[in-house]
Image (cartoon, rainbow, N blue to C red; front, side):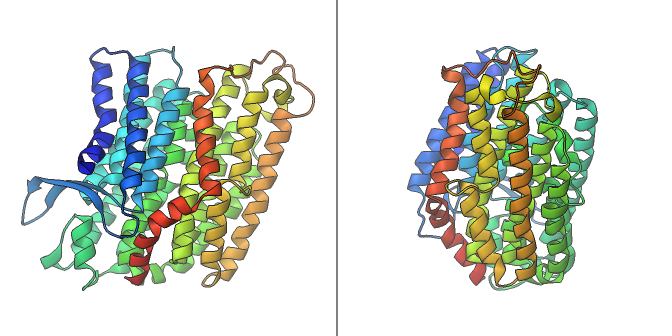
Length: 487
């Protein structure tokens, strides 16, 4: 029964995209798809056996059997690591469909591509075969590039081209890393199935771990916008339509950290140790250097884009900690960051549409003209800087505690990022929403009282729920982290 539900969760966006291509009403079908995904995901999470560390709801069937090379199976399943990310995907996916304009140029094609991004992101997280894990992520990237180029705003062609080049490079390096991972396993136990890999590497180990680790770190790191492979992200998100920025910054970017958790943390301890100093330097550059760059931004969309890059440093600190506390914090922060970033990009797009500019120098007093819009942005901003009661706060605190014992210097320096993020977010709130009403803001209309607000309320509800009850995620992931640490 549950295996069938997970299959429905995965393929619902694809079926909806096909239905749109056949001429069905695009917005109703897309919203229906998102609601089905979210409801069934919640049902699966209630049924997930949290006291166990293995995979549940597994469905597997062979696709290609080549004993001399690859034995590929389509295999999906859930455990305490990918289940929270599946929930994040379905929440942000539904909200992204909700904020998509009802009337726009080539709306049908827009919604089809949006559903394909959601389909790819869902598949990337629930796949238990390395081949499909990689392929599903690529499925999500292709419509992302196209949508930025076709429906983007500022410098959309440059942003789409730059994003395509960087992420294609990242995907190629990642492919090399996955191939290296596969061929570093003893020949008798080589497999692409994560379950078989877990069993095989419990009694043996990989060779060439430092080489495999650095390939995976660079490949996944480009996808996560780890410095110095970050410059594609801010402009790409600023140019992207709001639903695309929400899905990529809020969901797809977590795929890089997720992949490192799956492969590097349990199976590459020697490579981990070899490159730990480099990783400390890079994550601190994400937090401190990108933090200062974020302060210098003069436009709201670019500031949020750089802020998203900065906060990846905290996730890498949790990854580096290799502790149950840090790992649990990383899972909570991935969900919190995904929701807060998606919320901020959604509200920023509304401000652009209503005011016509996102330059701080031309904004001011928006809270007087659009109080509901202002409230949603301020909630997202406070969540981003780690306000207690929001999911981001719980995640960051756990990461700092988990990393302190082994990396006190890196943790102390990373703590400065909390101050930096407060500076640029509160500065943005002051410039945009308070002070005298600017000429551009004078005629701005607020969000209507009707149904248009529900996507924002959905994301705020997630931030508050997991802020007050982070144990919902921690208890889900704790058994898996115990196995990873023990291994």
